[in-house]
Image 1 (tube, rainbow, N blue to C red):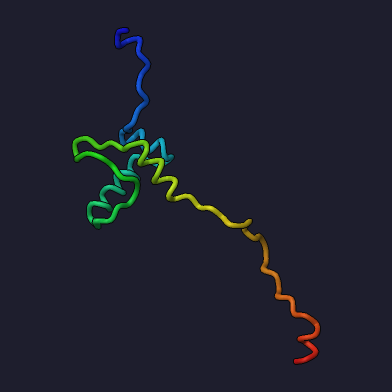
Image 2 (cartoon, rainbow, N blue to C red):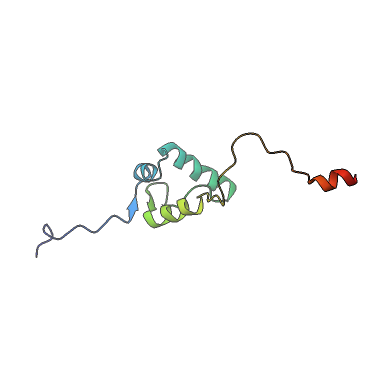
Length: 95
């Protein structure tokens, strides 16, 4: 079997442009997050691999980073004005 007939292995790494599209962000946002991470020493944005010449993002890292940022609501958010507290009638007569 020659190499042209073998199925391609799925991509494991993405360029900055591809990663931005993958997480539905922009190239410049990822560049800015890397810059902030470098200056502050705290990771902002997904982790990357490489040096200034070649930066790539592992798809697994992007998936984990997006999963860590999910928001799971425990109940439906309330819409509208807050309800007034209900005071039982026997408490109002005692006061």
